[in-house]
Image (cartoon, rainbow, N blue to C red; front, side):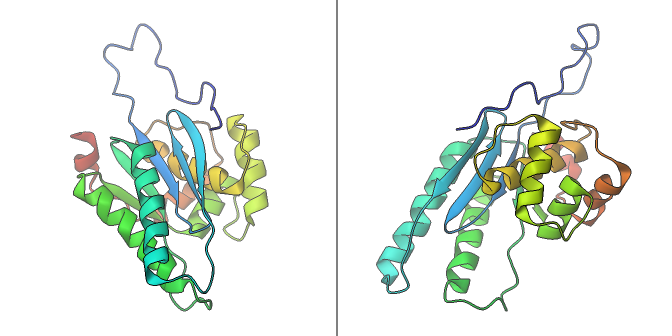
Length: 199
């Protein structure tokens, strides 16, 4: 697990008692091959491998394993920020499995009454780099630079950026970002703010 140092903004001592609570936000970059997870404790990745000839039982077991690991890492949070699924028209034999895994995790979080924000890949890239067309390597570099994080994979970088977006929406940004980057927050499918604050 990569550790993030001093990324949570600290309230001045004089205002700490009267200030808002520090929100617990998780970022999830859901993937069959490497799901990235970012929480207050740091970032991690759940890697798995599959084969085209895997049986339904094997495919289900793989998705169950990923979901279980995600729920263990996330625990109890005020908000989960999840990257939206790639379009269902995307070619490839794993399209159904990717969509199934995404919904499996979303459903499990909803069953825990955890509010969810759905963030498109372009919004995630724009918040990180200023361009929605940026590749994952550019997002990784931007996340390492802006947050001073040690990130081993782009999956973890994506998850960290998703978490940062959620905290920014809750007015507790991890770091200052330019206006052009911040504009990405407007296109996110956010939950009701009251549902997050009430937790």
